[in-house]
Image (cartoon, rainbow, N blue to C red):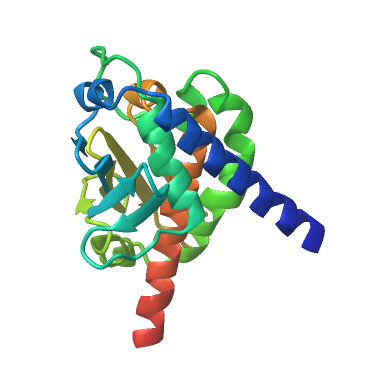
Length: 217
C-alpha cells in the first residue's frame, strides 16, 4: 500500500510540473481570449475562479494560492487548475445539456466503471439516505439547488464548467443512487483524465462536507 500511495504522489508531481512547463510555453493573451480568466502582464500572474474562490497562479514562482488568504490548494486541485489553463481549445458552440461521463468522447465510457466505484459510490453512501444534506454540503462550494432526483445541486467548477450532482433516495425496496453530470463542452476544456479528476474532487469535497455536518449534530 505504501508503494501505491508513493506512486500516486509521484504521478501527481510529474503532472503538476508538466502543466507548469506547458503553461509557460503558451501565450497568456491567447488563454484569456479562450477562458474567463485574468492575466497581469506586469506580475505574470493569472487569476482563476475555481469552486467559488479566486486563485492566483504566479508563473515566475510556479505557485498557486487562494487570493483571500494565501491558502495553497491540495495538489489535485492545483493540477486541475493548471490543466484548465493549458488544455482549453478555441471555443465552439455545443449543446447545453447534461451528459454522463459515459457520453464524453476519448475515454469516458472506458473510465466510467472506475469513476462509479471510487466517486459515485461514495456519494451514494453519504447522501442516499439523507439527500437533503447534499444542499448543505454543497453550499460552501457555491452549489445551487437544481430540480433533478430527490436532491440535486449545480456547482460551478470553473466559469465555463458546471457540474450537476443528483441523488435519488433509497428505501427498503429501492437502492439509493447518485450521479455527476457534465456539459458536452467540457471535452474542449479539460483532458478526459482531468474531467474524471474534477468529478472525483467534487465528490470527495461533498462527502467531507456531510461528515462535518454530521459531527455538528
